[in-house]
Image 1 (cartoon, helix red, strand yellow):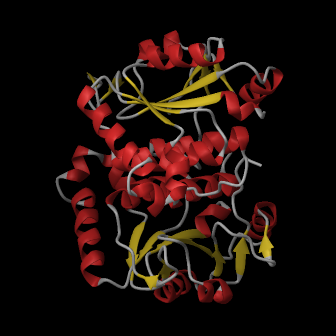
Image 2 (cartoon, rainbow over the protein chains, first blue to last red):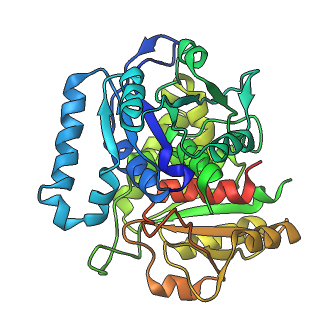
Length: 189
Length: 189
């Protein structure tokens, strides 16, 4: 078992900021379902959680997932099936944490991410060292949609991961790009 | 001027394979416009070309680009404007190559990418060394949509980049994820 096998990610649609720093629930998009599932499967992670309190959206994603897992889509594109097997819908970050604890018997360390650094940010190398030091320890990496995870989520997390820096001042990657780069830095060969 | 400033990427919608290995033109998607522009701007690259022979699609993307560059969108979200300034539509890989040659006075080295390795693939370290060895040399990285760039494109390119490998056999990243990881490996800090 590699250390990635105890590592999960959560794409959080609430609570996040919008453009005006109001706290909102963003909508789940179809590409976020597929791109991140494929990423999770490629790097051999445990779970890809999509977190939204909106029940209708959880149900809709479940329906899409079912289509590819056991419906017509499962024979049309088996690689999509393999990817979506990692996907699980959750109503909140807390229920995702509880799910990991229930399955593994250990409370995951929650790693918060964002485009802005914090005084207590850990580097990618630091996080990798922590993961490798105890492969049985589960981790949950939180990725914010919209204009990012709200401050309270940062305060509640066990660790804050350093932001990805670009060439200059401009540093506005999509959450899909950021997640791809983070997982490659942690688990890429 | 960093070496990234002479590096461009092209998201190629034709000629690519579909699921049945037929040669097709795929459709441009809205997220591909924005995600890849943000990536290009974040890493300080020269251009992000979207390549499609379908004139209606080129016109539609130009219209979207105009909205964010000089329309109402330019004041609503200036960061989107900064990202889309890197975007340029081209009818073919050849016209993208010609555009770079016209602007820089040098013919770019064309780097082809895909999920399968070739005997003559160069590693990320090899490519990085080539880029750093001559910062004035332009490069154009080709990214395939659909089921990937056709064989003839691989044969015509100057270099083939090694594929990104995951944890096991499964290796089916979205082109958005693959592009993000490639650029981070080449230019990330």
